[in-house]
Image (tube, rainbow, N blue to C red; front, side, top):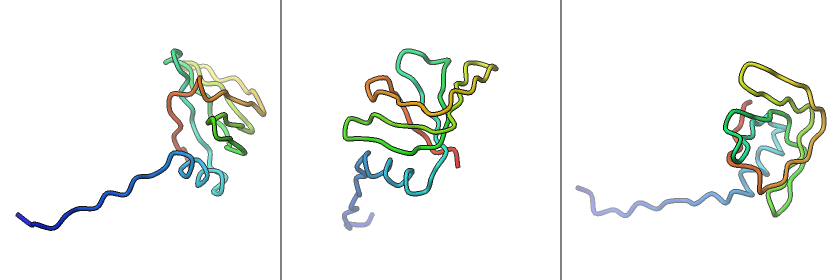
Length: 85
């Protein structure tokens, strides 16, 4: 075994969101306590409370999709944000 120490780099969540914002990434948001509902759209803004603004948002519930447009999601309602691009 090697005696070398492995250094782990911790990613700050707000920096990950900022990277998505810079890339104009399409993201999918999982909602808290609504496991069958997802919101997908282009990330155009966020704040320190993880409130996010999505453009061209689509609500996905099972096999059904509904266009929403521009939407602001409160950070308390977000379980996961993943990059779809």
